[in-house]
Image (cartoon, rainbow, N blue to C red; front, side, top):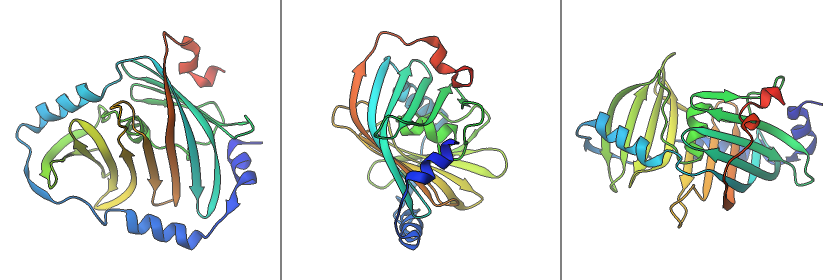
Length: 236
């Protein structure tokens, strides 16, 4: 049985119309207003990237909840992270059954062979769920603006008419939007933790497929190192 089928077999039906309404309303309705350009946006973006990169090897434990077109499934999860840019994500049901595994190695998202590729966010948004500011090398910084409330927005242009808009405050990622043309199609929004470490909560929404994945952090545990094999779930 595939991962997607396992998820569907455990979903609890809710109102698809309500979910669609929430996703549409939340997208872009309260975007901060730009009040002026960012001086030297290249240097400013580089500074944010350095401030948010992984600095310690750690194990992050969390709860997760997936809503997709009116169906819901949830469970527990583990993220293992290692500087400078390695992360391993594993989602389980509460009974311990595996749902999906993936590894982020710099700009590459690695999934086991045959695993569904439509549950987790794209690479840039995956890094953003950890609070990491990491546009792909192929993205071009198109500009940046100061926002009301003291935040800043960095705009990146990518291939295929895609764009990325990072919202940053106090050198922390608050949100990341992926746009196709002028329309937001996917986004990640973060709730900062009091300890200043990884986000307390990350919410990912795909507005095209009506999918929401919410991750709520429960613990961060320091680690010395991890088995190198975990960074390639295709070999497991």
